[in-house]
Length: 67
Image (tube, one colour):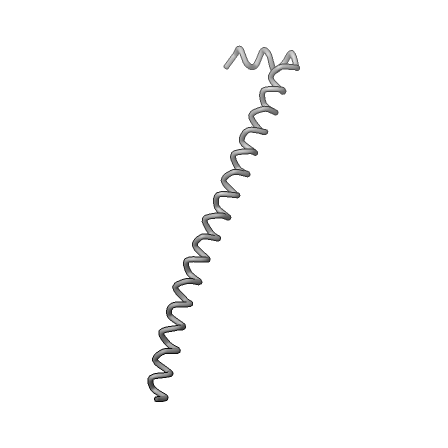
């Protein structure tokens, strides 16, 4: 760690490394956000399918009652 501190006090390199690290972690976060959104979309679609089936079952029951 002492090595890094020396470089930091001199300026230059250390800052560049930090910027690079931040950029990478930013990319990772973006990727995670995108993956989360996609997962949520898939879950939403699944939910909708299930709800659609439930509704159709209910409608079938209603029709049978009426007949």
